[in-house]
Length: 125
Image (tube, rainbow, N blue to C red; front, side, top):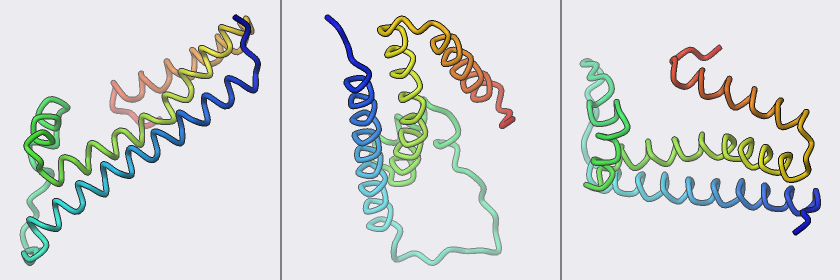
């Protein structure tokens, strides 16, 4: 089976659109839940509470999302929004592999390594 460059670009475009639409839907749903539960409360700006513990790691974030906590669902949608361009680089790499363009496979792999190293180390660059 032969892939054309336009097929890969079309697939990447669909991945970006789908990721964007799904993440927007998740953030919108989380925002509605958050406003439904906390929309009537008045925030106390004199006391800084910081980030809630359930938003600080992936396991507790997923657990809180399944419990339909609005903040966790919003955070999950934002993470998905951030992951969408990373998926674009992954699909580009796969496209370059199918085209046997190994120079760009190498460049894409370096970009992915930089992204994952930055994410795992906590340094923004």
